[in-house]
Length: 257
Image: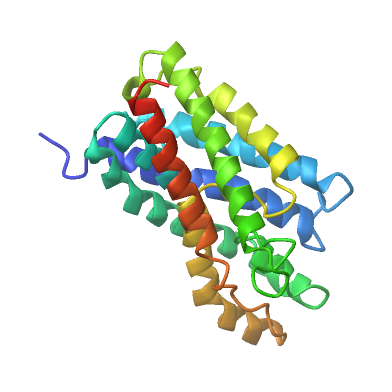
């Protein structure tokens, strides 16, 4: 009997869920006061955690016959490069997976969220989505923030393009491909992530951002401490910059560059 929910859609949902749990999980671990991993070397741990999160999420997705995009920018790239609009179906499930993953993280880290609020009410926001070092309007940094997210995503998609050329093709990438992609994610984090936090994934940013907007008042009330406001004025950059990078890289891949 045919499954009501195509298995590949479930793969994208669970893969993105796991990506966020492990990726934002490492941010919780190195920023919240009572965490044992809150020690020097935090950025290396964050880059490593996100890279391994991509690896684990991709494994789950591949096991469920998904192409393991885990990122709307990758789905947009594939839909253009291979003239396959069906890839776009994955995007809402990637967003939903990111939201559910963040909800799970918030639940298991509830005690840490409340305890950390006394010292740093901004820490929990940072464990949901990245914020730039320079604000768009105040610091006149919109172009630079946009460029960081654009270039970071472009590097990721360029690596995916190269791997799909070496492998059996974008829609049938086989097991080893999560390994080099995870290494590329780590490289992007270490080299290009320090200014904007390298979202490079609209679902990874927007899903947890929505969860934070829903839960912020609750956490503030429970901790008796005002948590940082949701920075919606910046939120369009982690959505638009990766999407434009995906369109451009998809077009280049389509013409055979």
